[in-house]
Image 1 (spheres, rainbow, N blue to C red):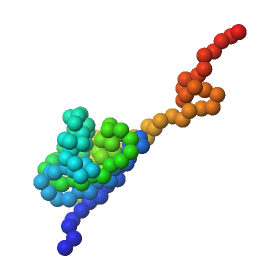
Image 2: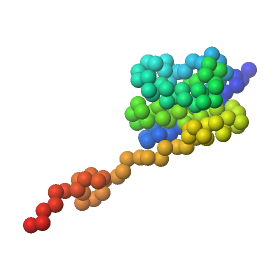
Image 3: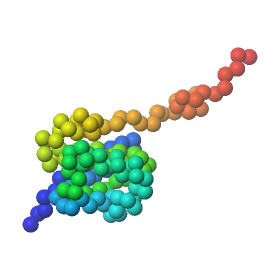
Length: 130
């Protein structure tokens, strides 16, 4: 018998997260590790749980997350978007609440490229008039 499962993909900076959401007791596993083990910072755990809090879904779903690339903060943002998309797949009635909280928008900010003739993306070589 196939289990009921909802899927969402999230991206942030160079991180990408695949979120599988199943009805359950509220257990969140990130890369086969517990959420608190993978994200020791409480702020990042709050960011990840925010779509569940906004939609009053805390404790209703088990989440299995695979995330790679980027840093810890980018991965947390990618997981947040993935959870929001999985919740939409579960019920499209949640869309107004998630949209109002700004959780369905992909943060498009990325690293600016280095330009030729310069030291970096914005930094220039020292200018001298003479």
